[in-house]
Image (cartoon, rainbow, N blue to C red; front, side, top):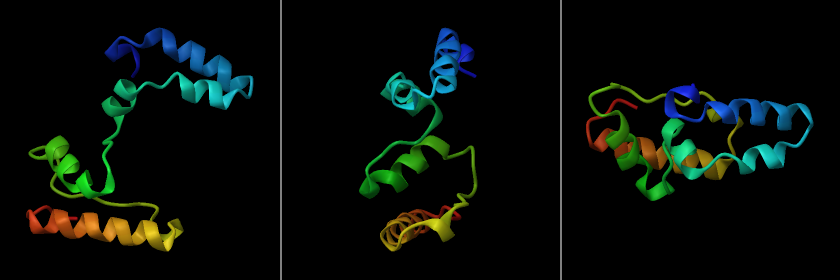
Length: 92
């Protein structure tokens, strides 16, 4: 997947670092541009808008898979995001 975005050489470098147990070094190679290509990044108070901007017209619902293992604070924050999405008509 990295090759499709011009980051093909990064694959081998990440693999070598991970195999060597140098996870922090591998993490350091992931730039904000790379992260934003594969993830929606936003502050909690802007996450609903960011999800809508990224997936409007592409997805008709949002699902969380690890809700059970989240802390109470994380669950409350996600509830706020879900409520904001539902106010815009998104099925969450």
